[in-house]
Length: 268
Image 1 (tube, helix red, strand yellow):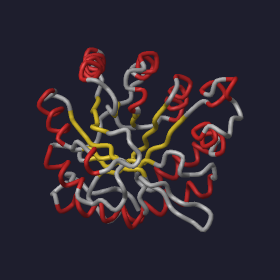
Image 2 (image 1 turned 90 degrees about the horizontal axis):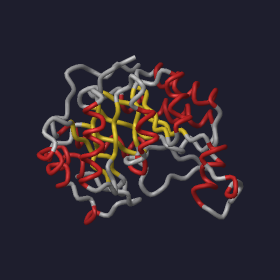
Image 3 (image 1 turned 60 degrees about the vertical axis):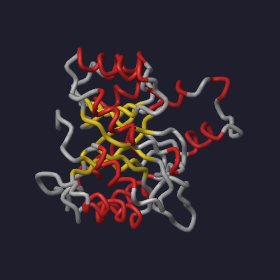
Image 4 (image 1 turned 30 degrees about the horizontal axis):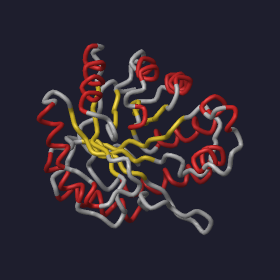
């Protein structure tokens, strides 16, 4: 277990791209491990947890006409399934990371001894959830999309006053994000506004856009997060998740920008 956020960290966000199929989820981890072992960075693999029995309102259960409810319900995994995915990540040398969307999910994260807790943009000002998160001994990475500067200051003060190890990520909540809405200059703004806080970049741009990582690195980002997935004959990726080949182009871009950790990736 780690109690610090690794230097020069790249986060691979699986989200629900396991498609509710544990075998496919394991295949995704194994496939991206082959890419990541080529680079001297720190890599984390990330999941998302929702306790769907209470996360989805009782009146909305089973509503397949609501896209998010349909997707969450159809890609549901058991805790045993998540245990298997985490074990696979560890076997390939990845740091483990999970986004909880409710307090019950934080309890699961603690029981599984996950390395890092991620706070999603939509939860950035969710004080009951944040109160539960800071009760753990886990470092925290939080995305800021949609948050006002006042809320960002409040959350940073909240974490700081509780002596938490944390970082914040510039993020735009538009999927995919067009070039004109990337607002990468926000990274420089956050870096200057909060000089003692490590800043990163969680991005949802079109997978064909390759220049953003080096621009973000130049602006001061030292943590990067990207949605990933693997297509099959039955599974198609959404418009903001990258394939293994696309990720390699993205990471190559960072490599050329001298985004290099002080020690090599420890995967197979």
